[in-house]
Length: 130
Image 1 (tube, helix red, strand yellow):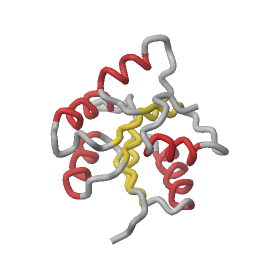
Image 2 (image 1 turned 180 degrees about the vertical axis):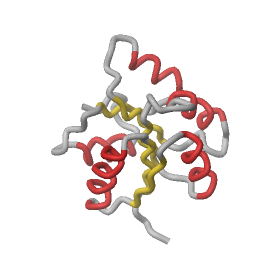
Image 3 (image 1 turned 45 degrees about the vertical axis):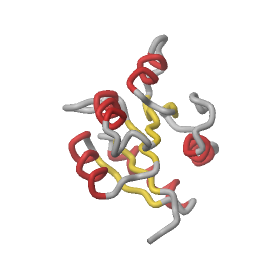
């Protein structure tokens, strides 16, 4: 069993999944991906991640609804869920916090600081990581 941090990236954009996976794997993270909320739920039941990078706008169940389900379940409530989204309008941060997100990393990602942002979120440090 690996001691590497386990990250699940939930995003319906293939390019985002590839880029983020590549960057995190290069830094010794164990990365899994899910293209929607249903696939994410299946993965989480089988292999509980340490952190979830959660896209908010996805077809079917959106990322906030999935986050609320995870935070309401004692078996998954302790997973760090980070909103991974292009939403940056006034009120979006409060909406994400209310849904239970533990952090926020904006898209498009800043390649030079992305892995550091993820590590900061894993440590449950500042809520908005820029």
